[in-house]
Length: 503
Image 1: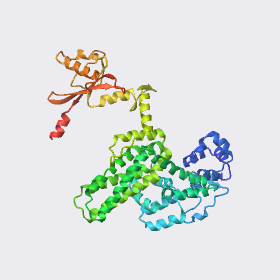
Image 2: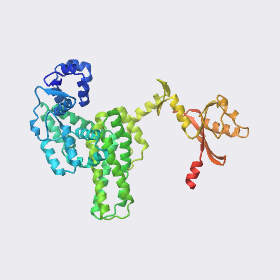
Image 3: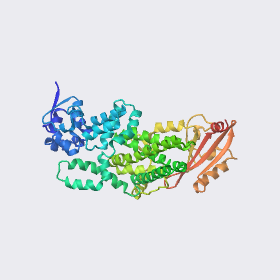
Image 4: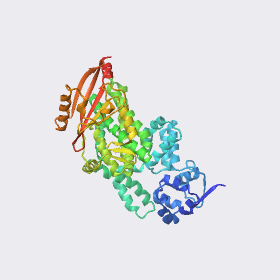
């Protein structure tokens, strides 16, 4: 017996009959359907077509997803005949399916203008998120990531100038005027969904010190450098130094790769950027490195320079009109604060260094609040958390000998394993000085005393034992307020380094 859904039924009645529809609709963007209060109230008067219109979600996409999950759709079907029978069949496909077909045709080598003609005929505009979903579905269906990545630049040419994001970014005033005219229109909710994403990204880009502010400032510099290099090439000038300087874009890409893409993929299940844009970033970076090393600056080299500049230029466009709005709609304030703090670990791009006071306060308050603790069987620390068993195994795995002495000069910890400098277990809880011969004790006392009075933070001692070089380093251990907590002694066999540099 087939499962039938009448589009005239209320969402409440449909989910009572077919509970599995809740997850299907939620995955399409109908978040409220998982809220019992909303389902039991608004859901009793809301139909799927009305809900799709309110949420700005394409009804053909909804129908296609329901059919894919085994449902037969009846009732008053939305009028979609204007989309063209060749490219669209109501019960079998939706916007994303159409987009996937265009991308596949491009991947199969069909002429760009031919595909673009069909695209323009069937879509007056398209949301960038649908492009991203189409690429993700291609990957899920088995299309090699490398193939999807190769299409990335072609996609940009296909959709360039036709996405809502592009129109909003390049014609903001016109959009504002159109919104005023559409305030009473049924499409206001849908339009607002697109505009809100861009407006939020714009607000963040204009917030001094915010990661999007810094990313945008860097992109503006990159755009200027691209124009300078192109201008120099036209004049026949040497662009070697300009290319070398422009390679700072690799730092920009590294920050995206470490701080943006994984967060979107893991926490928000938005994997398109990490699969496609990340690969393009790497190719641009690698090509710039190869070009920079090339000595023969012939016509072929110039063509390669022009090509990689075009790709970099397109990536700036994609970041501004696709990536940044997606991030703005999803990332929380706390996540932006963390991105800002982690970005400090990277080299500056063209000397750009922006301070975000709001994030600075958050990070400092977090540091002040944090104290290492035991929670639900794990040791929670500033850098993360792990079980006691994991911590012990990690310390025993490190290729070093570790001794920790507390602020009262008492041995508190030795890591386990074979040791060149023997440490009997019975020495735990004994004063450290009792473990050293009389001729060494004064040196140990001097080191620890210098740590306590803050005259030194570390003391390295090189020595030879068993015919091998060893580095013994003493470090002062201090808390976040710089209070002395103890001393850690680290012993490392440096034979591997000797062999590496003398072989």
